[in-house]
Image (tube, rainbow, N blue to C red; front, side, top):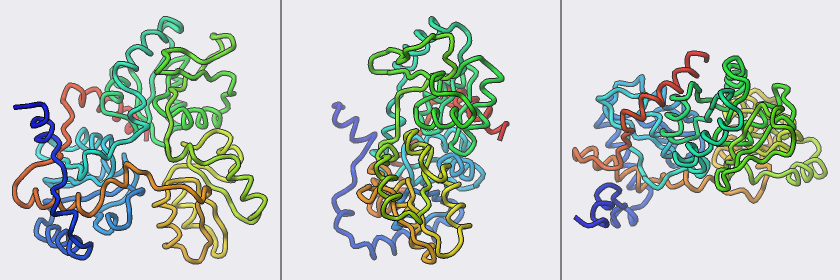
Amino acid sequence: MTITQLFTNVNPTLPEAYKHLSDEVMEEKIYRIKKQMGNELFIPCHHYQKDEIVQFADATGDSLQLAQISAKQHAKFIVFCGVHFMAETADILSTPNQKVILPDMRAGCSMADMANDQQTTIAWNLLTELFGDTLLPLTYVNSTASIKAFVGRNGGATVTSSNAKKMVQWAFTQKQRLLFLPDQHLGRNTAYDLGIPLDQMAVWDPIQHRLEYDGDLSQVRVILWKGHCSVHENFTLKNIEYIRKNKPEMHVIVHPECSHDVVQHADFHGSTKFIIDTIEKAKAGTKWAIGTEMNLVNRLRSQHKDKEIISLNPYMCPCLTMNRIDLPHLLWVLDQIAEAEEINRIVVDEHVAVDARLALKRMLDLS
């Protein structure tokens, strides 16, 4: 077997026929398969998915919430409409008789890809030379299974944007310092909210393998991995300044994956759930500029017509990798399941899953 044949078998591409079906035909077929499979099939959809996919969701939510919900189902097949690290987490938490399927294997996450095994090993070795046994690693759930496993092996835990403050507080009961992977913005904003000044935070550059910090190293309490969300980093202080000048009656609410200056100048900041709940509870007639993924902003706008809702950045695009999940890919994998074929299954090696579960369990036990 050639390398090309091996790759094609492991990661087959969408057959050409699916590209020529109308939306109406695909939707009818998907609904029919869902009805036929009943409780054998569970389709969780992340908040950032397109409406064409969300309409088929058995549950919507953030990545960890969906993984937990999926694991509680008796469904044999979990077709996870999100990105790769989310499907990995679902596989880690699911039972052995469940199969997690990702409709498009190209649906990755640029943030998760900013920390890999080799980089993390190098970083940990160099940082422990500098700081000794004073470091505890935390990782955002928006990370690969192998990074979760690294954190689990080294006594750390995962965090979400909803519980990051609680987990950072816990980390400081365990060790003097923490290494926060892979999103520097969530780490910085969370630590700052807890009263840690910026001059006690350093940044680790995984490309150059060096610590970015000008002061006395003994003062460092938080080491931030130099990673970011490609969507949320595109919201800028200029966006907020434009709103303040031209739409001063608007409230600005942003996700903590945004940069520190954006978060500090917004009226509110919090997790995806926090943003959704805030908009739902807001009074009719209020106006909101939201700094998060465009599919969610558009959905909130359509669901709350009694409020004026815009994107903080009017030129923002939806998350490109999340948007790889579309009707043709969803129908394709469902057709294969209905025909007793297996494609695009996400399987985390058990030796990785064991340590990753430790990191997840430490967080869940504190939640």
